[in-house]
Amino acid sequence: MVLVSLLYVVIYRLTSMRNISILANVNHQNLKNNTLTDGEMLSVVKARAAMFEDSSHLVNEFIKTRDQFKFEESLVKECRLKPKGQMMIIDDRALTLSALDLHLGKIKSKFGDNFTLAVVDYLNQIVVEGGSNQFDWQPQIIVSKKLKELARKHDILICSPYQIDESGQARFAKGILDAADVALILDANTKEDCAISMDTTKIRGAAEMKFTSPISWDTLRISPQSVEKPKAAEKETKKSKKEGIGENPVDTPW
Image 1 (cartoon, one colour):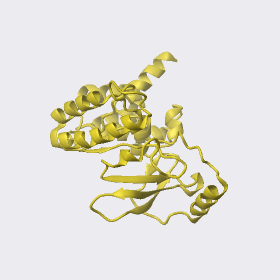
Image 2: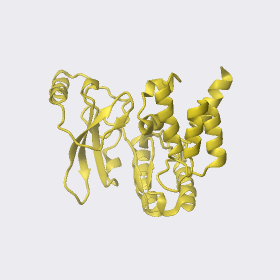
Image 3: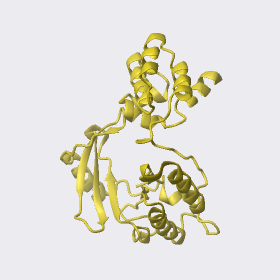
Image 4: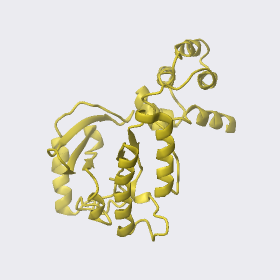
């Protein structure tokens, strides 16, 4: 059991299970529980192979052997990652601003102009050296301003979720949005609606935006197409505000 778990970690060390689920369009729960069907496993293998150059022969070999561990080992040893379209995940549980600057600098020096976007998950978790609790309002404003400076320094876009209170305002300090060029509120609607809505609360130099995209909760894949916001979700939102439902979303990182 330990061996299987270790090998499972090896397969997905370059990307998270969520990303694999999205790229391969497979059921996320099956991937998480290691209960993929043969068809889903083949989709995962093809998604992994698509990240590397000259890897199609390994997919054909997997179809013959059905050995996903051998496939992953051969993929890493024999093939090179494609220079574009890659996603790097850095798991730093005590992320500071100086550490973030260092991480960004290393990636920029390695990938150059191919490095265009950094996602920090999430703003309220970044630690300010020498500061007080990271959930105090003053450190959070410092973090927000520093993220803007780092985006300019490394010539990239930096995106970071932030917490909101029951009124939809930024939790801890509204000032964290002063440095942001764009701020959006995300509404997952209801699970049955299979749609995610976004609404700008701030956008610098452009018109306000509202859009809703379909999402598959099985695979976590979000469609690039826009659809009309579910009416049922709009009614539920008004009802919740009126009755005071859901007034303590302190664990919601957006």
